[in-house]
Length: 290
Image 1: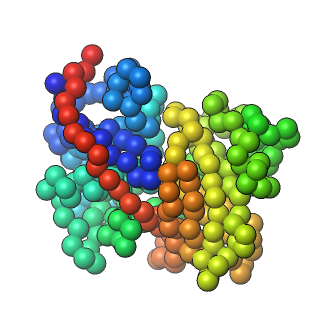
Image 2 (image 1 turned 90 degrees about the vertical axis):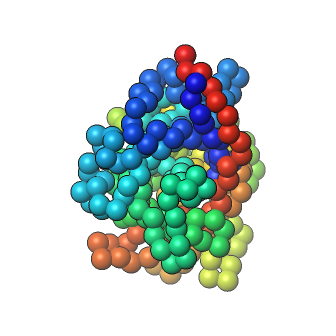
């Protein structure tokens, strides 16, 4: 039997499994069964809580930041490995705090290892804030075809530790028409795939110095989710890019599961983007791995 906790960040839900010493070797099939909403616990992905010293990928995290004791081993619902998860890392940090495995004092930072590098988590007014690090235009700007829209739309590729393609949608009505029961088609196809976000600007776009947009997302390896943290950050970055140099650096992004905050700020190694929002633990239990 394996103990687990179920948690979510704005409806983006995860199965959290504590494996501090790295003794558990989850197969792709086991992850898929656990995340199945009919035959398993049900989730968008799995967060394995493992010490950085107990997982091969943790060596790079410890070299970058020796204080990064914990590593977020994140798996998508289909069992595939993902580099980062913006909602997941907030839930991961919340679990560490609630389980007594780490503390985040006011004004202090908790470094967490990920496959995208070490990410720093702090407390925020809405729960937790994670510095997603440097972002960049990926140069992958495919055309996007999606069920529910009659014409192909151009996408903007943005990398925030994992790949995203953002598509501007003309209206709330068009956003509602999207049928995200299968993956949008990208032309050209991206070898590593990408999360695809569809965004509608608020009316007005900027209120009291804060940008406002709405978004839906299809996550690679998962499907449509109620929220995608890194996708929210990529969406705000894309809209700011389209809006021009006078666009704000603070954004509120509404997703089906709630609202998240995004902030862009300068750092020594270039501009960073931070994501803030809630994290909740829902229930705990035990399950037999088949």
